[in-house]
Length: 486
Image (cartoon, rainbow, N blue to C red; front, side):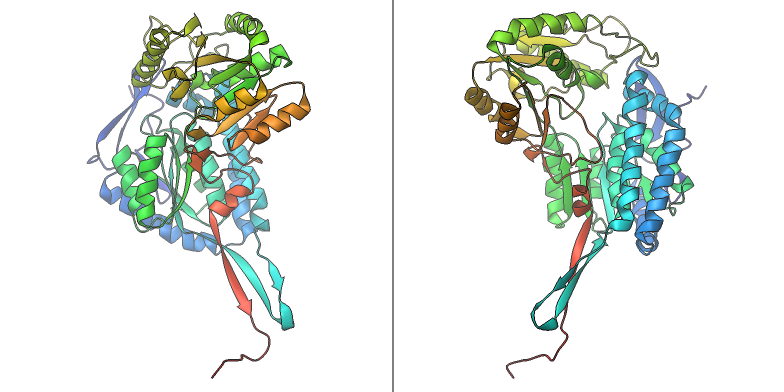
């Protein structure tokens, strides 16, 4: 019997599903059980050609519409997503293994927010009038880039597709989107919904595949911009490929973000922030604050309360809404994370709790907390992308800021303190693009999101995203005679 998650075909191009069995076979595994829930094929060169050509054709007509008309389509798509939130959330849970309790509030809903937000501002994407001496003047026009390539990660497949598509389409671009080969299902539903909402066929196409397909998409001369969410090594490769064609890029990459807890912090809030910054989505979030610096006088109380609250973690069937901790996305990811747990123990960190594989089908482990972690340990330096928290001691502000910044990454950072002056002062000194004060991992679409240093370039969300999906044309208008030397 065909699983209900099996799509009509692997790709969605020019307004309908399309298959090419000549592409490499792809199996979609439900991380909670290890069962195969869908079988797809990677895009062949012929599929990629059709996807890009249809996007080029759709983009010209789409860009000719007013911003008001484009926005109306995006807002209608947001309404459809909200109306189907439960079905989309169940699919997201099958695709990723994340608990339904989480996907119901954090995935399709945030994708709908992006479509609504950028749909609402599309009509206001205007240029400027610039008066000049002598009666001359100039004006600017904001123009689309053309066809954008979106390359998604596996942790938030619906959200990432919408975070890229919404600003791209609002600015008048088309997009060819490649989901992660581990989570290929959700983006297909977004493509369906956009067509239903009135987007022209070909405006948002979905092609499947692994790195080879992403590379072909990135380097194709018909692609004007590449937007990637992924790891730093993948980012380097994609960035280099895009540079060959002098393409626009947005790189939303990984991190090893610091979360600093001063001894005057509200303990429950700080522990809650650390849980959200390490164990939500089973720790598979790029912005996670996985280096938790706790001021020495608060350390034992923090660990005791953290251990107690972890007793309330419900590790079970992700389709059961009582579950709040799901599996890792794949067997390979689980093995990688467990290897980091072994390294933490071997290098002398104290395993406070968790870190064990569960004896059940699927990619399951208990959330791990390490104490007495030092800056040089592997678990304090490398991105683990799983439910592993490292708690480090610190004594004073200058020390913790220097240690927090001593990393090649710079995606996120958080500070918990009741001293509001110190909170803002420390945030101001931290080298990170997305920061949180007395909170962690909030990502409203109104707020720009992105990193510094090796964690990426460009910004997603907020008005800042518009600059990364459009370009300005300047026009100088002379009102009088032209004077020339001869």
